[in-house]
Length: 486
Ligand SMILES: Cc1cc2nc3c(=O)[nH]c(=O)nc-3n(C[C@H](O)[C@H](O)[C@H](O)COP(=O)(O)OP(=O)(O)OC[C@H]3O[C@@H](n4cnc5c(N)ncnc54)[C@H](O)[C@@H]3O)c2cc1C
Ligand SMILES: *[C@@H]1O[C@H](CO)[C@@H](O)[C@H](O)[C@H]1NC(C)=O
Ligand SMILES: *[C@@H]1O[C@H](CO)[C@@H](O)[C@H](O)[C@H]1NC(C)=O
Ligand SMILES: *[C@@H]1O[C@H](CO)[C@@H](O)[C@H](O)[C@H]1NC(C)=O
Image (tube, rainbow, N blue to C red; front, side, top):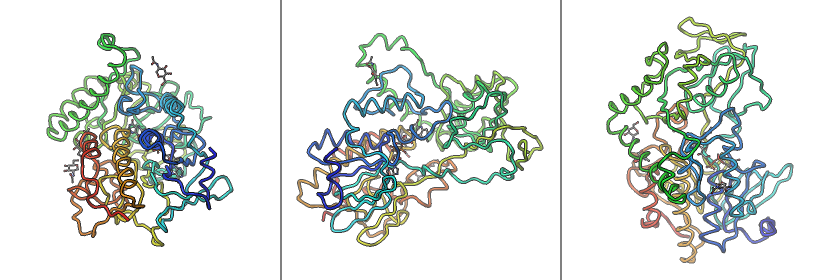
């Protein structure tokens, strides 16, 4: 801690400042500590706890969609038999990882970075700590700020919602004290959050209705609480690696199968859904999405909990649009009326990169959507700063790992070269013909596209797409192309 406090204005700048203590920030700290142990670095976290997403979201049943063998850290094994884990268990795991490797020593909690200014070859960070303003100086920045706005969810207009006399709840701000026992609940939305909420709420509610404008693919996945037979045949240490490699390969195969044979993938997913649905809930329209599999994120349902809840009659599903909300319920365009005591608006996240922090480079504000992204890691014209971002079609943590592999290599290179700064430069004449940073057709991603940096079809301006090729690039690729050393 004493080292951290020296980092204030007037003292020597830090080597690296990590912003955010979620999965990405903890992962970044581990890699710096292990690979460049002589560096002085700190993590500034706006909240009073680690975990980011897993500390913020508190709705009933919150869990991962990804398997923890790849969503967990490569350097701290997830040793349980269930690939999909509940929020509190993930938070406990993150805490255990951070404690085991003494990473919490680097964190300053309740420190919100409010602006960043690059001048004289270093960064000056303005930081709010309670009512006090502090300044930190650092040579290099790692943005581990996640990808969405913590304070504002995606704005959606639901006509008449202000007339509603019951309670309106957004999953991002779930009230701890909300008692929904024997209540009639309508969950608006069809994404992972809605699919998670419905089975959990239905355990105590009177009736839960999932109201979706258009359906999503939902796939039941097995989530055993105990080791299955094969896992008992292998030594414990092997089992983790087998599971991790299996998830990596299976995930890759399934995604690419969906993209290559959309018709076949659609038929497969629909057949599986139909076999689990009760007879009176038809596949069409409720489980027949307008898009092909993996054009949006696939929702996982551990052990088919979602389908079982529908079969139990404690929950039901409506595919329709809202005509208007009145004091006691929702009128649908088809004429149906759903009475409700609670409305849950599971309508999505508002995307944001670099934590929404205003960035100034040599006196000029940086306009992110105008910039290309260098190998999915740095922003054009933004010196000495990397963004730890994940994948949309694989576990986030894999992307964070690929980011740190490339970052550590670059930091070592910078040190060896005797230069002080590195910045991606291009003339801006590149064609924007690459995959968009987040190439899925989900509403919240499409709406955010205009705020995202640009990408081209060839390195070094490609978006990050694949763990294996990113790791290979991070190790052997040309990390000088497109960069200027100052
Ligand atoms: C409900 C939900 C379920 C998800 N499930 C999965 C899943 O199963 N698989 C998957 O791959 N992904 C999933 N995701 C995506 C998930 O957010 C990421 O996987 C991962 O948790 C992101 O980690 P992160 O550390 O990059 O960002 P975050 O978890 O968002 O953490 C960012 C941290 O930065 C801090 N911060 C931000 N701005 C500032 C600032 N200006 N100053 C100081 N601190 C700041 C925040 O307080 C926060 O602690 C899910 C997301 C949600 C919302
Ligand atoms: C599994 O991991 C947890 C923490 O993540 C640890 O406390 C526990 O001892 C581990 N169990 C085994 C059997 O390794
Ligand atoms: C993710 O998508 C990209 C294309 O957008 C693809 O090349 C890659 O193989 C996918 N990764 C996985 C794990 O499916
Ligand atoms: C984005 O994904 C779609 C499938 O949803 C695919 O057809 C398209 O080729 C991808 N875009 C680019 C630019 O690769």
